[in-house]
Length: 112
Length: 276
Image 1 (cartoon, rainbow over the protein chains, first blue to last red):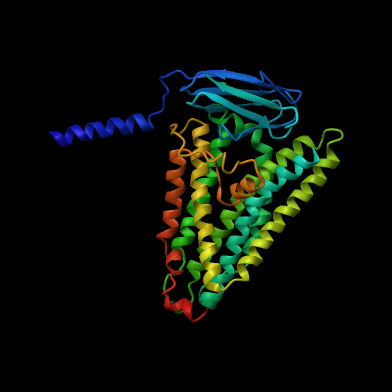
Image 2: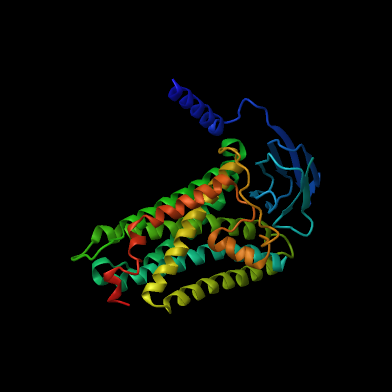
């Protein structure tokens, strides 16, 4: 009896660890790249929640979204789009930049 | 633009260049340890580079389509698969290597090892090379960008290849025992990194669950410092790895540590003593 209870607990833990949170709606934020700039350059997201960032590149050149703080890196092709999941995160500032045009393409995710 | 091109091309070339060096060192060591019975032709490097560049061109060409797969996380899925494929090939290599004194030729083992080395380098060049091609191909076409990007790229590639050559000759200048030991440590870290990178990419795509970060060493060694970049390319250094990344990193290392490749390095191993 005790054994089956612990098995049940284990299976619940494993299920919760590996099941895709498809049922829980993930908030989506749009980030546009235009003239090698990010719009908006500041993204505010709530702490402790996973967020889907849809990056839309309106330039004809590719760009690489990169952030050391967020541990994210991805190429967005010219006139294309891409999706990156971030979080759940602790409150704080998480700068990101475009690796191909770092002088202008700068932004920050603020987690509150 | 110029300096940026140097850095971007350098960091992509560096990963492949260091990997090639370590595997080439093992190719030479196998020859010295086993002689003709387990000897690989070094020409595998040439094949893997040529095929890798062709593969990188194809991948780079189809990236716009690949990006749209799986609701715009296709790149993560393909790149993670490349990392997992490389890890599997490295593990096959580590388990196929003979672990004790052998007599006669081991054709099948030699061929399989050569195949694994070629595959690992081929996959690395496809992944790193396609990023360089997208960067150079996508941006050098703009007016005023061509000269700084092409020259920056050439310098970045030159530095990356030079560091690889330095590592190769550095390891080859040591005794067989120490070259083997250090090569093995590097191979363990490379294997661990492949597992960790696959996890990171699949987490970014939301194909794997989020796990909290294991530690934060960004104050101690920033990822965007020169040493941070070098360690990232060599062993996948990250200032804030997640727990799942750490688990997969350690698993990759352990898998190499239990393989016959690792057993060969034990100092009490008789068969090495004679060649040292």
